[in-house]
Image (cartoon, rainbow, N blue to C red; front, side, top):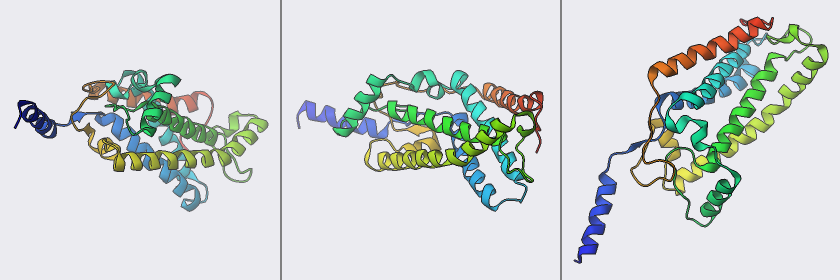
Length: 243
């Protein structure tokens, strides 16, 4: 066997036995999965909850808390959780997609350029759905927490949007799930497994060779601040922070 062949085999063995790398820290993963669960519960509580939709409104407020936490964590959290590390310009996104179509995608330890903007789109759609829910009414017995401080026209528009945005949200969720399943099945990275474990197999990544996790104390501070912003904001605006 040639020296180059031996070296190549050794390198391959080393890559296989190398420890997995941290891709996403625990607060990032908890926020993602908790938000997914809460969105599912929001649909369930809307159609199968109590008649006054009290649980649905609590669900919406919880979604807003997780959203605000994720926004804060996207500024001060672990390296791969920060928006500044995974939001790329149009040229990079197009280049990534072109490489993906040719079967030669560039690999990212955190979110890839297309996946990063999908995260933003999902967060935006969920935020729009939750915020319009604050001002939604059925004009009979159900009023959102902020209905009494808004004009009739604003409430009417918010109620109409709340009934329509979920279709966009469902489409984005479907696209996100399908893309992750396909990439996990046929790509090098098991994205679903990585978002559960927080780790990806060792290798060369374009964005970073390793991720830096955020501190637990900083995550707790972001959570407390998120709760204060959501419930305190509703109360200061004259709404009902507790349905």
